Image 1 (cartoon, helix red, strand yellow):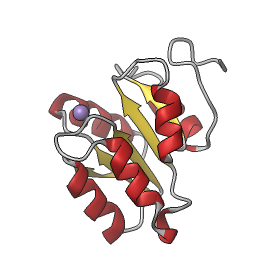
Image 2 (cartoon, rainbow, N blue to C red; image 1 turned 120 degrees about the vertical axis):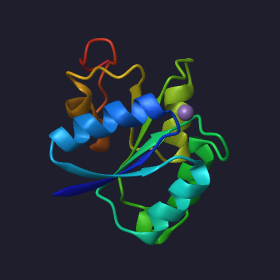
Image 3 (cartoon, rainbow, N blue to C red; image 1 turned 30 degrees about the horizontal axis):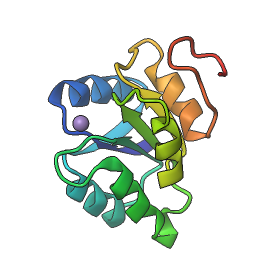
Length: 132
Ligand code: MN
């Protein structure tokens, strides 16, 4: 069973993401702020972290940067999931230390597959699922 930390503040996104991940066999722990996400990430071990980049307190870029300063967090995949669709945000997320990147709105049919690809650093085009 894979254990995943979902750092996300939007209840609709939490509901859908948690549902899809649990159906795929993941155990999901939710954090609703950047601060809570940081604490949870450092207090337990996760196979994967999903990071919303827009959070009410510390944004996902900063949380990711802080996590990456910890030796024990160096190898944990962090996948950015964000509605920010500005050119450059993908690079910004990767520069902050994210392993991969998925754009919202998430596609329920493809989300888990996209996530698992992104966790391995394999880029997928959000529109087509193809390599860019
Ligand atoms: Mn958000």
